[in-house]
Length: 605
Image (tube, rainbow, N blue to C red; front, side, top):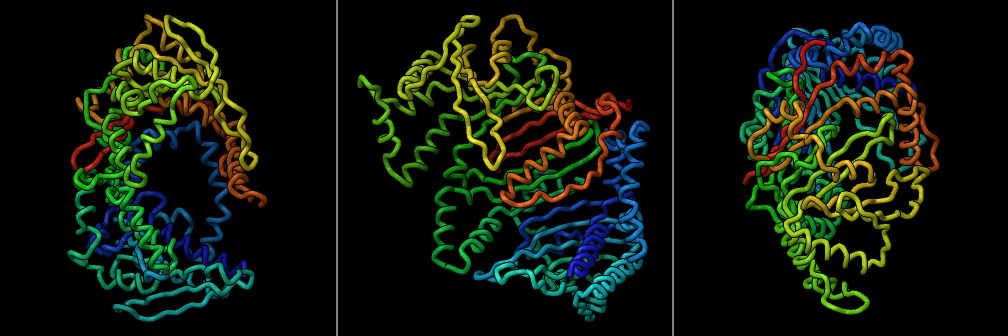
């Protein structure tokens, strides 16, 4: 049985790796029909590389690609090649190609998709790959055929028929006697081709449908859908090197059906809850990726498709009007990251009130009446006392204590205040009502309140990272909250050099529109240093094991193969040469929100 499973996995690996092109560059040969025109409109999610060859070449030209080929990484590359050599040689013996040769087979576009199937009582998702092998189609067919024979020799059941003039293979693993009746058997591996285009998936009927519509299916295709078309326009999908798309409405319906397990009443109840919460207002999410274009090392775009006319419930809370956001004067030039968001909190309160009243009318008023101090007086008003004094900007800055370690990051969060005096009274009332007793101290004319946190119990052996005290103050027309008072004190000191005047931020600022809903600025050096040190010391592997132990309580932690030998890593300065400034910005309009993230191109070190 283990031998049969191994053979099935090898076949899947050969198919998915060969069709998705995870390896070196190949020559261009465009597919006759774009995959999104072949896939049905029942597709739930979709990922496509428009041209594997050009994508590989673009990666080599980025800082990431140049770093990988740096002479200082020669020992690391050689060590990794030595570790995968047995697997590569074994694949050569069994199917006729090494891993590197297999990866060179694809020629053009490659897509991976999840297609909804089954019925209301038993919905399913078919995973499918569509890929163009171009002139290498005969070689890839030979590799898949040899892999299928290997699976058959290991006990898998093989069914071959002729479909649309070509062999159609269904490889079904044998039943596992150790599985209980509640565990579904593993799906088959299905593959075939039409011309130079290959199809691989987990359901025979779905793959036959794709082959039947290999020339496109017109208005019933994924690519013809309104949400997909709008997303492509927003993210520049036609010119992007890679794109992805998720139909949120269809995904919610699928999981509602799967959760109800054929119970119509339960399915209807889930659908009602989704509508009541307004989650159906988010129609889809999609994005694009480009490498090595213009001034950019990389650029990503993500579009949240939520038309203004359909936004309600929870989604209505998140209103981010575009404004001219720039770093506040109190933000030090030394921060590692800066994030700011234009958030209409007045509108957020109205949306919260509407949502609460929809389920429990008057609940907020009831809660307000309970927020009365021990000596009576007027109850606290959420709208007048809490939300009305707030401004419309939320900011978060971070830096790292030296020497940089895993727990070195310091974060300060702030909310702009329209009426600091009123909010100070609200804060005092909240402290009184909660019977809190923070330590009070004066610093640069501001009163800092230090709240001690209770010890948090460990969850599955993992200790929570949040440690006190939490420091709170109102100053500079803002509410500040942090778990590191030293950074807060730096913010409060007069005479700092502001981030807005730093050359690094000015460089990133040139890439931003005048008005945005949110923006970020990132210096990657210090965060990268933490990751490097974790790899170098072996703490990264330890952290992975702790995370797996927490997610699998009372189960043995599987061995994790060590592909990267920490002793082979060069000095951090080698990596630092290739790190580049980056940032992002988002803009909300009547169609939803588009977020653009980028890292800037850097001259060759």
